[in-house]
Length: 421
Image (tube, rainbow, N blue to C red; front, top):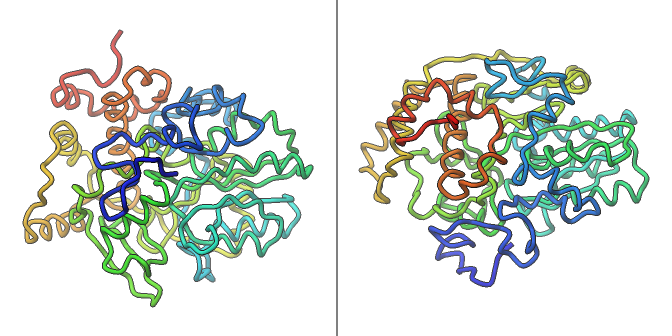
């Protein structure tokens, strides 16, 4: 996904430090909307439907919710998490050692195939010779699904496989993917002629091109080539598991942000669906305690999927602590007046990290905090870089979710949170 101006990896991200990261400038993606996450729809015969399906052209969350649920979000946690019927803390009793967490997502895909509920599963594998370079997979066997265990936090054109689904006459399909992929899939669902579609959503934020992920790991790890899994964890640190099993941790406050600016695609910074709210079942971790996964059953089909896995799961407790609202004014101030590139002294960073872990939000309150901060950050990004697109790409619930901070927003940014016309 690099362009002709790509700099050597040691000099910075593939799009260049300080530049707007537009994938649509890349040769393969020319002619696409400026905001593009390379979901794969435009690589399929369904490309003519892109203007009505792409969340970065016309976000149709509100319309799709009405079709899926017969209603839109209630003014509570649904504004942040999306509509759901039940949520759980869970994990596999027998974890898959190859998985990012316990292997629930791939186990579910395999179970659906095993029981004949679906004929194929669209999921994401790793390109040969790499750990993290994403490669869409149309899995027809249990082994093919299980081989895709482990997160690949890179852009992946999974919807490009819809042509193969139709060519092979597949009528019962499971889809595992990110929120931009799921939004487009839901928008074209009626065109696929499927008898059954199970949508398993992965919470997603700030994916990158593979070259940029390689660069990112080189900046945050002492041994980037041996990193097997990595995740931004609930204890305010990045965990990196290595080949020998040891876990390297880096506090968020210690990130070399001056070297990371420009890595994330503009589409990801213009996305407002971290929790993958249009899936049947969302499987993540952000709202659970360390070591557990956060699962939201959103539809009747989602409840069915969870029950299919329940015999193999440990069920824990969802908790919450702290007050996310205390940190929002400071977060707004940092958005309005970004700190300089120079990091605070080591001892100050160490103190901040300790206070975050001891006093910061946890459990579901941590999930609320992260989602609200991402909504606010991305709203400001759209307003600063793509202002004319705001009415089309920012969904209705963003303004409702952030309404409690409207006065602080006005004082900090000198404008209203929502259009007052």
